Image 1 (cartoon, rainbow, N blue to C red):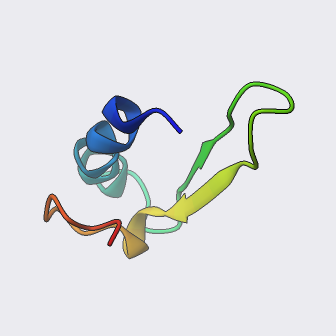
Image 2 (image 1 turned 180 degrees about the vertical axis):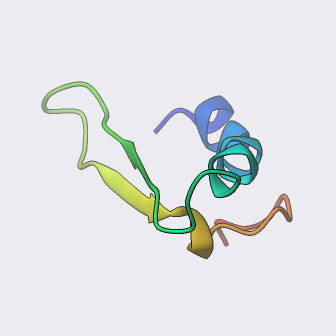
Image 3 (image 1 turned 90 degrees about the vertical axis):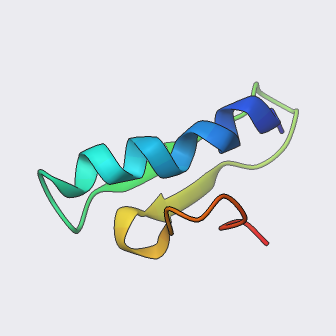
Length: 52
């Protein structure tokens, strides 16, 4: 997966929380390059190591 995109998820999540706590972020890799990842904004911490 593209780690620079994952690094942007906490900031994106913070902005989306202003609109809805139930928003979902879906990251889809190119076809046949992996599986999509889905996160609810309520699951994402603003901490930089949120994925671990």
